[in-house]
Image 1: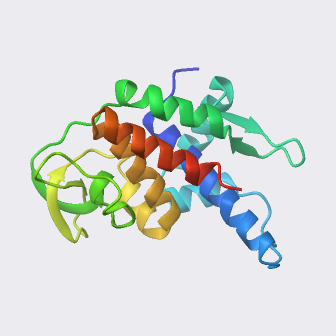
Image 2: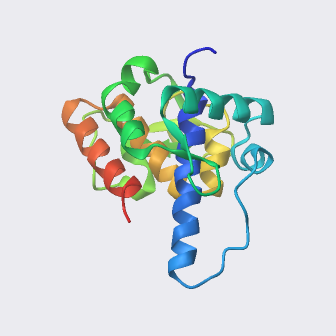
Length: 189
């Protein structure tokens, strides 16, 4: 089995988002009739092929970034380990380098849910290149090519991925702030 790939982080963050939505619905008294999300569901929601989603889950389980649920056996992100990896290793394993100016979807410090919370030292904002993008900024290659599409469908996932990019692109202070906000969001009851 090969090492972790960047799309594994996207899949794990989507699993966190789905679990949080399930818990939110349960807490509001709405019966959640859906069973565990299938590889096909993840393929449709993330734009990552079924075989890649399946391989991603296997790699994440092997590395300890994911665990099998004790009750239903479905894969779940190992939140604390995932956060440690994002905070301390991600920017070295999957570095982000700002590129040319392009139209795209705001990420990192410029993402709508982060505006005013994190401040970039640069004069330009960062964007994931996308033809459907609404802003112009320095292009940043996302963790996986379908990230802009997946983020448009799931605001919580968008926030997580933007925070991950803030960790990847930010200096020590910005990365620490983004990591703290990500931890608060992911570990929230």
